[in-house]
Image (cartoon, rainbow, N blue to C red):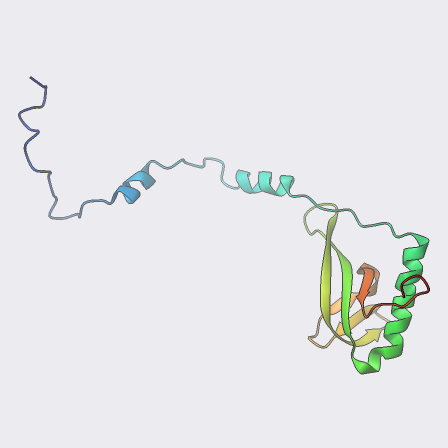
Amino acid sequence: MYKYSDILSFPHHRSAVRPHMKPEDRAAQFAAFQALTGYGDEIDEAARLTDSRPELSDEQLNELNEGYRRLAEIIKTRPETELLIFVPDEHKQGGSLVTVTGKLRAIDEVHRVFLFEDKRRIAIDSVVKIKKPAVITAGNF
């Protein structure tokens, strides 16, 4: 016969003090232990990609200057504006390109920032492209 055949027919022991543990909770006891806390976060951070700030050609710089001029002309209308800006990464070299949209309230020439109605302040030097309002040049009719 089997080694424990004399006790196989007995009912499972139920404790009066503690309820029977669910299988999910029991499995959690044996989950992997992370001995090096924070190490996974460091690896994720090192693997995170950043972009370098785009170098603008003379033509792109001229378009950007034309866009600034156009925005300054129509600023009183509080134009719906869409800007592509470069945001430097806080933790490593590089950054990312982000699109910012909103109604432009003013251009602060002294502090070199765009002021939006929702109180956002975008540095003029961070702008890579003015997407909206579109700048009409001889090449894009």
